[in-house]
Image (cartoon, rainbow, N blue to C red; front, side, top):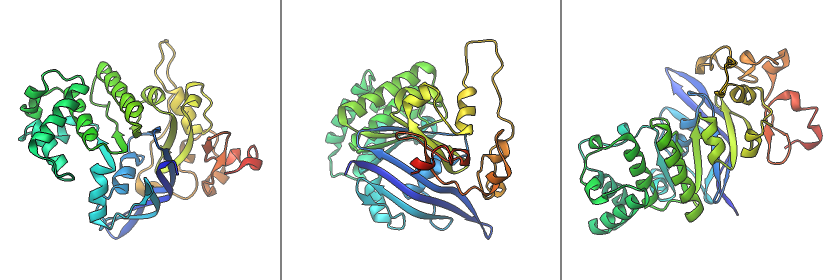
Length: 327
């Protein structure tokens, strides 16, 4: 078995004020061992809630999960708090997008290493200290001993992001979830972070789920890419197809067309807004903003169609084209 993470028919529903809202619908996602998979989509489409709910970080009194989520051969059960605590950190580590708000400002950097390690391991303070120093050096942080004694507010955003990667690596988790880790840093630090994650993937064989809305970064780092819109996985494909503009779903095409270019041409805009939870209806969620939409889109059941090798698209207009090769 070569799957590190597999989601099948994954649904996430929010219960609030006596009503239920579908946040994620029938999501399928697969990450192979040693693979980097990108997840892209607009803010608010459900990217972060996907991994938070999967790792049991969504309040079970307000959030309902159905479908199957399997991590490294273990079926995830968010109602089992003990097993989820064991999985978080040991089997899946997370790198968040805003390092300044991810650290407690009243504790030193070393304290954050110690707190993380002692939640899962019986290591001594000296063992943790030595591991932290070695990892910070690997993150190209000078004077790691000095940095460990510093408080988060004394560090730059780029340094804190590298510290966060080091903490994630300390437990040697086979899966790292990087939730927009380059959003709050400048272009130079973005390149450093992606280079570090590539090195971790190459040297340790660590699988990575890299979440972002930056197509250029996703294109550079990922082996395969999933596209999410309003809680639905509308397309997935090898990263090479993004580089060569061989994407198929109208939403992905619009994202690609809106990439900044070094010309004086105006970038095309996507009319309308991402639907709120209360605005979501049956059928294709992208239909109200799609230039190809027809009445049948309103009743489309979001069936998946194969558009070639490892390429899946959820758009009814491909039904006839790929009728003989449906997934």
